[in-house]
Length: 198
Ligand SMILES: CC(C)(COP(=O)(O)OP(=O)(O)OC[C@H]1O[C@@H](n2cnc3c(N)ncnc32)[C@H](O)[C@@H]1OP(=O)(O)O)[C@@H](O)C(=O)NCCC(=O)NCCS
Image 1: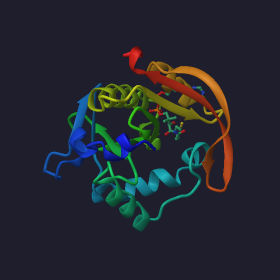
Image 2: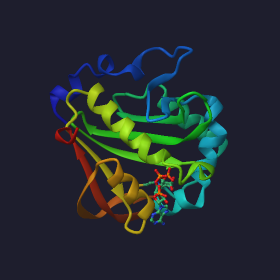
Image 3: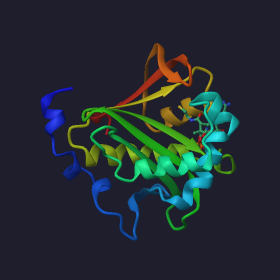
Image 4: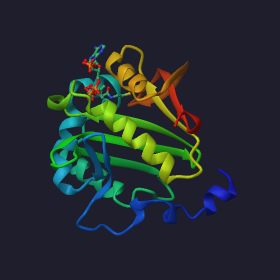
């Protein structure tokens, strides 16, 4: 990790570091709103993590309610020196019903991986595709150093492949044993969206 990265004024870059206010919205568009998570989302966050499809294609560990609250607490300051990850709620543009979550993990300010999970009752309605388009455009607009976003998709997760491709991501390679889910390392298909794709 470079000195510049350690010393960069990350807090001034991101709206996530502002104090929480009544309006939790970070960005809206595509019929959706991306907002900060709050404790109210904890039951749904636990429910998403326990879903069979989520556990099949990503982290297999289901969160308890208490762990979900902890995840939300940790996500609040969002851009922490130790974490550099954003986990956002996806809701309707004009209603606050949670449809899923979308997150960005920054390895460095110029590169991040994106992950998305949609609640079962909202799947197949274009939510993940719209949220991925929205978060990608917003991330490039918000973090000026950002040049590359990656989506890591486990082979066989065809719905996620459709989402990445519809959101403008390009399939690049297979990265073997790249992703750790629980105790297991799995291969992933690497999809990428670079600033020049905007
Ligand atoms: C993958 C996931 C995020 C997709 O969310 P979504 O909101 O349903 O996605 P969208 O509606 O934007 O698009 C999905 C498309 O894939 C299609 N699809 C769904 N299952 C599919 C399958 N098994 N094979 C091929 N296409 C499939 C859908 O029909 C839809 O296309 P359509 O609009 O032509 O009908 C959601 O299923 C999910 O949360 N899965 C569990 C977690 C996960 O896998 N996350 C991604 C990790 S990389």
